[in-house]
Length: 177
Image (cartoon, rainbow, N blue to C red; front, side, top):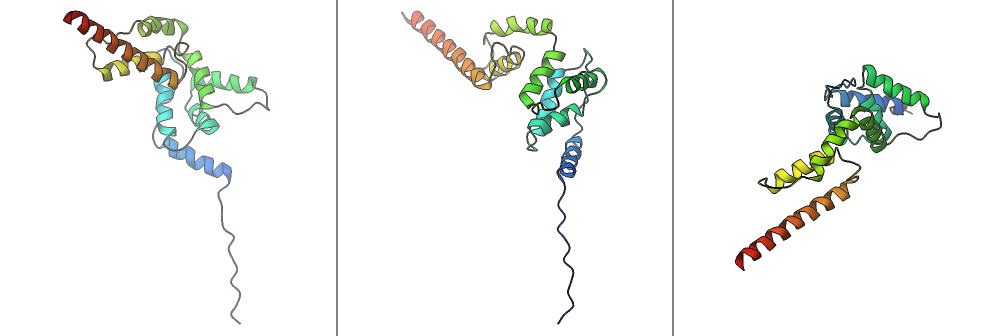
């Protein structure tokens, strides 16, 4: 009878180790840090983190954790205060909720108020449709109260484009007659 070979137990990474590996992978993309200075682009920071996290399949509370790992100075203190003030049994923060809180904190109301009329009075004019959609989407990000979901944004763009085409048709018809 051959000697018994001991069976090595299969090693499985713990959830903590798996999370650490994912964080290291996230950090390889060298996402910017955000410290909350007025000169920093809060929306750009969030977008950059999301563009890294989303293809990695990291979302929800892990995405929030990885993003808050990039906070420094006053921004980190803001986050730390939020965490300390939250009840221990509070549900994990979703990406959407975190984004909303973050942008409310770091995009001043006055700046949002300044962008709102630009959004409300945006006209295609000489812009191509693609230029118009880009401009519309950029401004809509700062007018979230007006256009709160992606579906509403798409529908709003479609309505505006339909309205422009209808006005153009009426103008052509009125020139013919």
